[in-house]
Length: 114
Length: 115
Image (cartoon, rainbow over all chains, first blue to last red; front, side, top):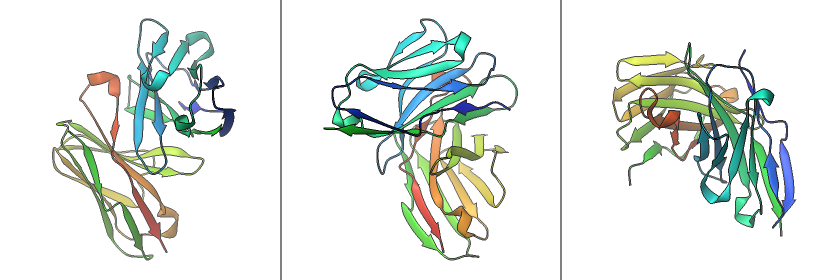
């Protein structure tokens, strides 16, 4: 079955440090890839998305993600984390062939130390 | 601003009660979705609707039903609530086929507790 894996349940970084959140997905033709962020008490907000073209995509709030087809990965990065980035981050994959499939990973909760 | 709203935001109910969660959107999107979020499990799709006459089960539809009253309204019902339906429920919308690459827009969520 198609799946999305976020191997890190919790990550703690110091403010100003760099960040990388991992996401791996099972093989599927032409997946659309997304990263969403959920701040406490709120719904999910899109950070960035990828379908085709340049494999390094830029999103909001200074985030970027790189698609690596050979590794089935779509890792999220930020060069310098701010305290306001503390939230839960979800990777999602939309498979566009066959039965409708829009699958979320289990999330990574980011804690930022002052 | 065009938005996705959910009512109620919080609800406590008892086992066996029928409960309805409501979702409205002003985005003009055709597609609407209901998810539940549980700690450590991410979001799981309960039902989705591509238009008023097109409603489909998601991966965890047992114990739930939905109604798409209009393009802008999509309700989720628990016919007889049970404690393991305690969760955070989200409504989401998206454009039609291929629109915006499938980006979904989420409501603020409804926290449901079944005692």
